[in-house]
Length: 220
Image (cartoon, rainbow, N blue to C red; front, top):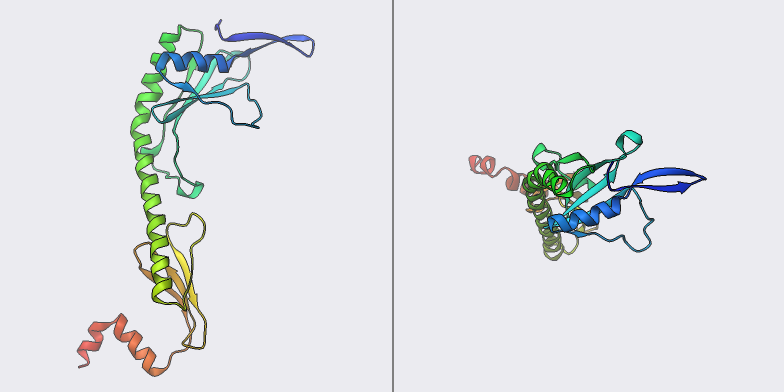
C-alpha cells in the first residue's frame, strides 16, 4: 500500500484517498522543484496538485476507484506562455508527454521514473512551444505596427485589430472623397481587397496599371 493513501471517515464510513498534496510536496523536494500554490479564491482540489521546475509545470492528478487509488497521472506543460486556444499548435512535435505512475514505491524511484518518462522528454516540445509563442507575439506586434502605419498614411482609412489577432486586421473607407473600400491586411503589410466601390475610367486605369504593370508597359 502506498504511504500516501490516507483513510478518513466520511458519511459515517471509512474512505481511502491519495494525499496528492503531500505527494507533490515530497516530490518537489526530491527533484528540486517547488509546489505551485493554490490561487486566492480557488476551490480546493483534493485530487490535483502541481509543482514548478525549470519554467515548466508538472501536474499530478490522483486516480479514480480502488484499482487506481495508488496511481497518479503526471503531465508537463510550459509556464508563462501567452497562447490562446486558436494559437495552440497541433503538430506532434508540440505534444508534451504524460505518464501514470504508482506511488507504492520508494520516492527516489518515483522521481527517477517521472524524470525519465515526463520531464526529460518534455524539454524539446516545451522549447518548441516557447518558440511558437514568441513567433505569435512578433506577429501581433507587427500587425499592430502595420495598422498604425496605415492609419497615419491614410487618415481616412479605418483599421481594426481585434484582441489577440495576429494574422490579419480589417480596414475600410467610406466617404465622399473616393470609392468605398474594404479588405484585410497582414502583419507584413500585404492586403486583400474584399470590396471596392464604383471607379471612374481614370481610377480604373490607375488601379490596373498598379496591379498589372507589365500589361501597361506592353501597350506602350
